[in-house]
Structure formats: C-alpha cells, structure tokens
Amino acid sequence: MAHILIIEDDRLLRQTLRCTLEQLGYDVTEACNGKEGLALQQTAICDLVIADIIMPEIDGIKTIIELKRQSPALKIIAMSGGGMGKAADYLSMARVLGATRTLAKPFSAQELSALVSETLQNK
Image (cartoon, rainbow, N blue to C red; front, top):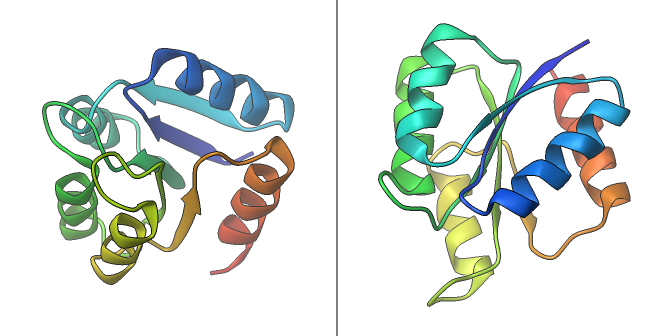
C-alpha cells in the first residue's frame, strides 16, 4: 500500500488524518511542520504528501516548492483553512507552485479518502 507523509502543525488534526488513512490501509508518517516534513521525505520516501499551508518553521508553500525541487514527480495535496487570508487564495498559490490537488478545511473523511485515492491512481 502507498506511504503517505502528513505535514500538519495541529496535533489533533494530524492524528485524525493518520487514523483515517491507516484505517484505509495506507502507511502513514507524521511531521509537525515543514522543516520536519522535508527531513522525513529525504529519509522515508513517500508516494504522497499531504501538507498544511499555514505552519511554523517552514510554511506549506515553501515546503511544496522544496519538495517539488527535490522530487518533481511527487504527488502533493495541499490543505488550508485560510489563516489570515482566504483558503482559496493559499490553495490556488499551492497549485501553481506544484501541489497536485488541494483540499479546503474543514473536510470530511469521505472527501479525504476520495481525494487521496484519486491522486494516487493518477500517474
């Protein structure tokens, strides 16, 4: 099964995402910010990264840019609830900079499941 890296600073959401994805049969690794996520991706190559946009250390936009520089074919789902701006603005920017798909918070487990499955199936 596919290996997914979740990069999310909200501990509760990160754990919820992990549980949801593990119940669907995926192997999951967690990172609490972009800096940790970039380090983990270099040591445990993942099939998919799900990254929040608004995070400490290294934000999601910079993380996406660096992930795509390191691995242009890597599939990335960017997610955001908006922070100080509108979620759609952050997600649009993430898409332009390399995110494969985007997901606006809040979202359901069914939306997450469908988007992950679709993203991993598209080569």
